[in-house]
Image (cartoon, rainbow, N blue to C red; front, side):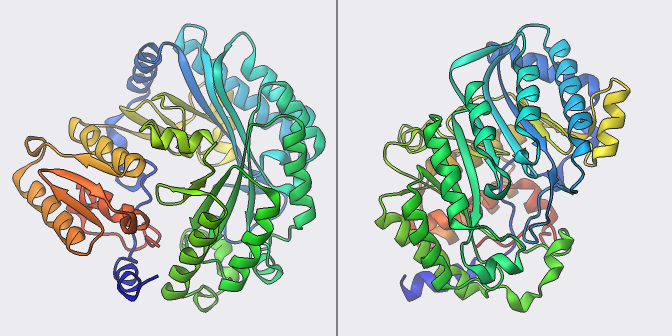
Length: 454
């Protein structure tokens, strides 16, 4: 890494949205979307997508708290919570099927958490049988699950494969024992390897491994050690995320202090080393935090300009109807977002009342939709072309000024209203997206809303 690039990364290491949506959740207008409007948006998108649906199912329970995690979760060792929660999820799906009015074709299902394999294999099977009952499965479907290797069994992967699951994502983060201790995630290489081997045995087409850089007590040596171990696992994809230090939001992160978290220059060096090591192993960088082998569908979608991005991250299924089931899940019709009640109790109470458990949402304006597409193009294709007529004069001037500053730093080219992100700008794509963010432009506030960009 050159000194010039190191200087730029320091310069741009400020708090920014991750742009899994636009507008980002802090800027949603909760008054813009009623339940009736939401149901109409869902029906309209269902028809436009020719009955194809993507499902995200949030399974929030974990037996132990991983202190780095900022996800919505419930820590418990009481497995009696499993069936009541799954029954609520299936009841919510029934409500949505009544809204849709026709038989869905399931294109994508993603089980996230929490720890989805907190639930027993038998209970996950019951969940999926209920989800799939009386519905169709798309020919080129993608059904995936996030797993914690410590809580995943041979039977889990077997029963899920039998109902069509073909992708798996394993949380690893770091194999260094000191890092694992401070983030409260002790996890052996052998157990992780066993889960990967089971996935291969049962025909899962793609194995992803999640890694995080910038964790407390993490070093360049632990990054190198971890990726050397990952080499033995031979995954198809790697998600190499920046640790989001948000102790004001995630109280578990108060187990350690700011002094335990690597400073910006070390975090930048960690990313640079990880990027180089993964490239040496044959992985190709996609977007700002993903890597894939040449044969993987994710890389092919990127190369063919068919890559898509939503609340679950990068995906090859470029569909615009995502229905989120379970507490805190976010649904997306492209023209509207809706988020469920965040606590298990509030979620289940709404379901018992036979109501959609929505707590808030946002109906996208015409300007929102234009900007959303620009951000998606930048995140997925490294380029976009703006139409000056789409923006107010002052906001357009702000966009162009920010893009020219980024161009002067060698992160992109901006010519005839077309933005092309250069290789050295990929890590800073959030800054390019932020140039188009009207809510950020109007508010001028990012403090304690977002994690840092690197």
